[in-house]
Length: 299
Image (cartoon, rainbow, N blue to C red; front, side, top):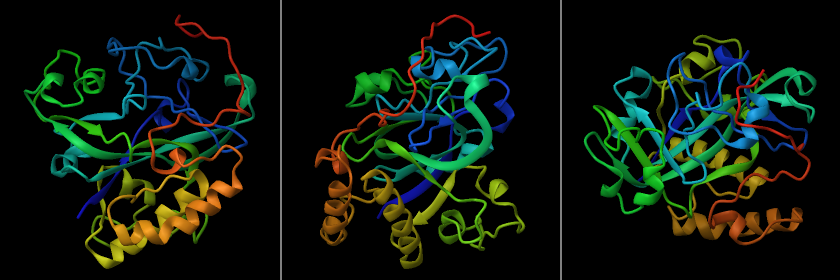
């Protein structure tokens, strides 16, 4: 049975002066990758939509990973933060969370309010794993794998991994799912535990952020308690986005979710059957602003 790994991605608090992922009033968001160290060049520029939310950094000097268009994720697993990802196997799930900044609909100076939210933003159901010494041609989905940021030299280095997602069960969410870290009964405190299995508490020790800083398996779906907590998060994501995190893992669960899926589709004007368990859709943007951008260094 699958395990679910929690992975922190994107620009974080240490990057707040140069890169921020915005969340808009309708709950849609733009994922902004983190800037690389000075002197390092990324394998490709960050997406055009990200450019208004990156400043004082060349948009080519960012680490565009996960690759949401091609549904891949890579990491240096020699880094203690990512070491647990060496244990990921096919059909495990990578659940991504990120820091988002509330934005009123403008670019940097006139858009951000300063309010922060920590949210679940997407998931990757692992279909293939490429390891040290392998090249994109070793994957069945070689075209998608080749575009991952970790294939800088066509061959993965020591302790590197690239995870290729199943297109049916992987997605950048259409709307962010708030972990509610400022609420005593927030989603995070109801469903996540420390690495030693202790409950996380608001204003408790360890602080929730230090407990979740490293990638790790948060739920083993063979264990009843873990499965129950995973289902709480699955339902929260489903209500918000129409995406079923655990789809296809249990026929009985799939049958029980059909009424919830019908309710979600009925409540959204843009829902369709492919919006729940079909191929990836890019985030809903109807209320998000449109910006004119270039690939030059932002002022």
